[in-house]
Length: 348
Image 1 (cartoon, helix red, strand yellow):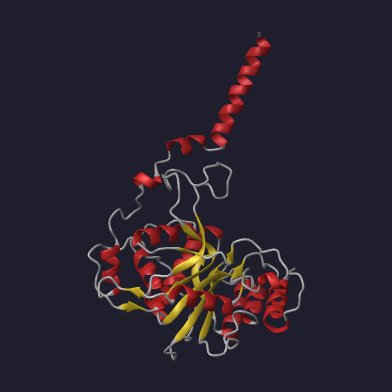
Image 2: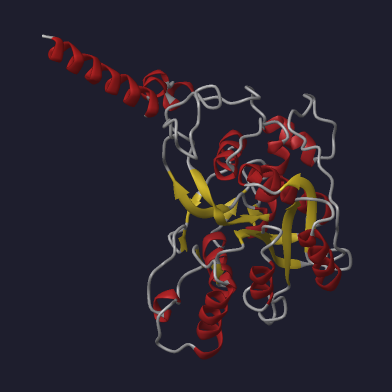
């Protein structure tokens, strides 16, 4: 009898432990995304976006203006009247070799003839007088292609980095036809990206308000690898989300943050909309929420890989972007093979 009682206590204890660890209670009490979704500000923000884009004072005060400063700047857009493609690379301070590899590969502004292209790296800060900061300052002086912002450069501050990049573009370089955001561990083919954008935006779109045809840069185009998924409620998960942070059982459709492209108008609408959408710590989820509230459609692009595509070099011929290129030498080898030599060999 005593043994039975002991076994009962153990079973109940294990059940309670697993119930807690796996966040079962959160899953049970999550609200229906399909029926109840809303997110602060709990209003139609589209009229406010129109007011901001028209240069007017919005009729409702913004709730989400990030209080950070740009510690460096660049005159890249000052003397240019037209940019076809602006590449924004989210980078960590100490990833010096990755940035150099990008400058020698897809970020090389003079490689694609006939295309006006700019590349800019966005980083945060660590200790003010650290060896990393001193080295970064030399790099900024040499290349003038790094924007440093005064927030702590950590994983959970990725939304800050992303939205400060949006703000810099909106304020300092709003002229590009398209903006491509990427992480510094991605392989990217600019040729394939531009080909894809042209295919997607060449359709005859009509502005419903004016009845006139919309060109690619003026369309609401936001494309990348799209996910439909649910929040993780596990107590031990790095990506755990409590019901207080987000009470619904599914996320809005969102595009992974490793690589995505926006038209000129989409970039501006997303930035203006973000002023009225409460911050969220995961940048891809946050942009999905902003896009939903601003009524921006998402386009799934299967040629962008959120994992490392395992293939021969030939298998990369149609790839726009692929994750997993942490090693700068592998990035340079892959890019040079595809764009200069193009032999039939394996990606490292």
